[in-house]
Image 1 (tube, rainbow, N blue to C red):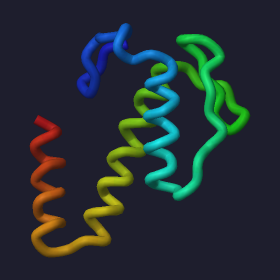
Image 2 (cartoon, rainbow, N blue to C red):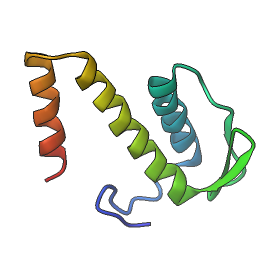
Image 3 (cartoon, rainbow, N blue to C red):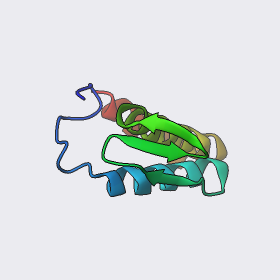
Image 4 (cartoon, helix red, strand yellow):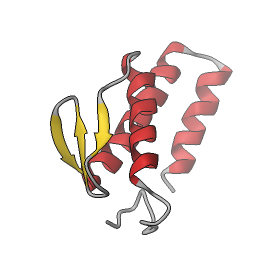
Length: 92
């Protein structure tokens, strides 16, 4: 699993880390916690649906971006400008 967003460090992304990151990111966007657990190191269950590891990692990133966009939309002025600059820099 190698993408532009994540380096290939499978040993640091344990199933527990992925579940915790997903629950946290989901909660920050939807204000409630999903049912989420690992079946093994490659398969997870999210709200009753089996998902693979790659989907989970990409979905965590998408949810984090959505949460950041939500904060930017709620805050205008200096705070919004700082968040926009951070997003631009994170894409480099």
